[in-house]
Amino acid sequence: MGSYANDPGGSEGELSERPSLRVRDLLAHPAFAGAHVVAGGVGLDRVVRRANVMEVPDIVDWVKPHELLLTTGYPLREVPGGLASLVSNLDDAQVAALGVKLRRYLDELPPAMIAEADRRGLPLLLLPDQVAFDDLLTAIMSGVLEQRAPVVEQGEQVHQALLDVVLGGGGLEELVDALRDHVEG
Image (cartoon, rainbow, N blue to C red; front, side, top):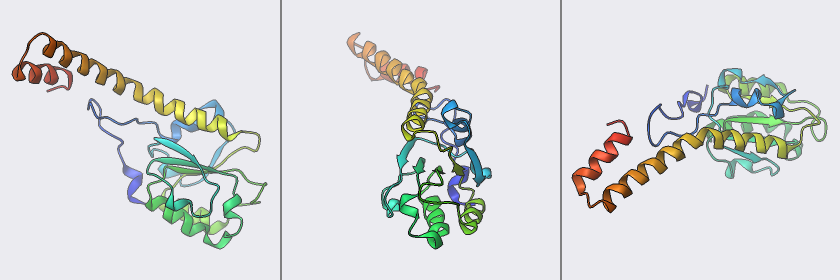
């Protein structure tokens, strides 16, 4: 299993807490109805912070950690033997999951790719034919923003508290006290 699989995604109560949307959370979203995990099920707790569409063969150069990649398989059709190494490279890049729509450019996922996704714990999702990528992207980004809202709200509260201290003539000690009150010591 890749080193990414156990990423906690931030601890509770931290001001700098990152969104904790997980691959498994997305699978419960209506936009992902009909999607199923074909490999890497142990990685369903991987954190998703962004989404991308994979339609170039050199995608590994462009991915970012915590991305959920979506593809029709177009860039994969030329490299069926290299799909297992693609899974390894995506896992090394800390990609959250790979969602694939079959039948347009790929008829099936090679067994070596499925085995490598299982070995690495990289969730490999088969997406239903009828779902549009924009619906999936919207679901992912809405979920990320929903998870991030409390962090943004807390940041605004800290900002306002510090601003109140400064505008009230408070000094460094009052600023430290106000900050401590908002970030749990």
